[in-house]
Amino acid sequence: MTETIRIEPLRRVDLRRCAELERALFPNDDPWSESAFASELDWGHFYLGAHAGELLVGYGGLSLAGAPGDMEASVHNIGVDPVWQGRGIGRALLRGLLDRADDERAQVFLEVRTDNAAAIALYEAHGFATIGLRRRYYQPSGADAFTMVRPARVEDTT
Image (cartoon, rainbow, N blue to C red):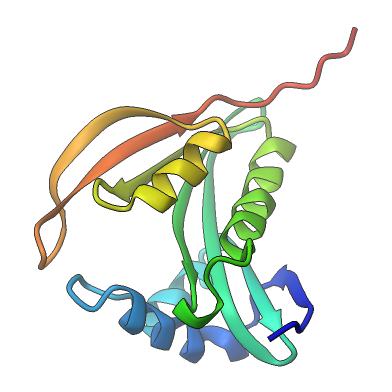
């Protein structure tokens, strides 16, 4: 599997695969359905897909809210096919989402399972800090989540 990975806007044709990956990645929680992903796109949220050829191997989504100059972003999800994990795909998807937030100078929030050490390390490496704990956030498993935030990136104009 040395195929080149392309990170590009998520396509509606990929939504069934997103739901399939959700079921594989989050079997003990409430994985998102194809219609949930469609609703995200209908609302205008920013989604990226990672493709190996025509196969979707990862996805990530971000919402933005607020007025220009006072925006806030929230990472809704990042998922990578288990067969393709460990190749920097999650990092590339996160970087793409953060670039979009940076375009708006938005601080970025997310929730992550407290037992997901790899994801926590990735987020910390990108400037996120833990600011809270949400007990029993993920259902039906009851797993806890950390709330993390990354400050807005503001260009230095000097």
